[in-house]
Amino acid sequence: MQLTAALLMATPCDDEEENLATLVCHSDKGELFLMSRYPDEDRVDITLGNEEEYSQVEGLKVTLGANRLLVEVSALDTDALRGADHLEILHTADASDLAEIEETLQNILKGTGTYVSEL
Image (cartoon, rainbow, N blue to C red; front, side, top):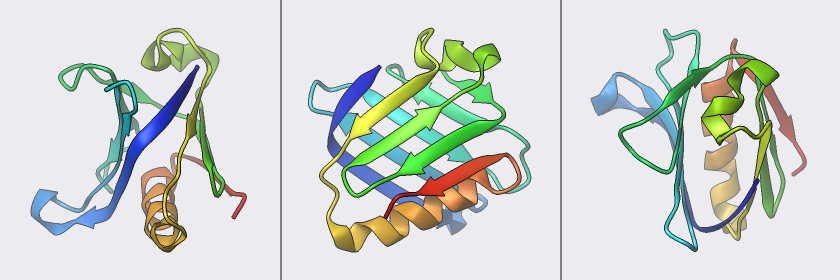
């Protein structure tokens, strides 16, 4: 599955939301991808499409590159990505925003998944 991001936003630690780390993508076709995690949770929440429906996943692997974000889930968690085992998000995030995106991904995946940097 692939999306082209019209907007990619990251919040490494939202103090007003109990230190919630959040990555949000709005595609050029209006689709929503949201990945978030509270620091005391063992699972990552993923939303694809409808804001009100989310899945909790474990063993997530996320790879960040200068123009691509690859999200891979285990075979047990493919329902989070509409039956796919990966989601490739093509983005045009400004280079100055990549450090915050990277920090957010590290916070989300710490102790629950794998982060790979291609930066």
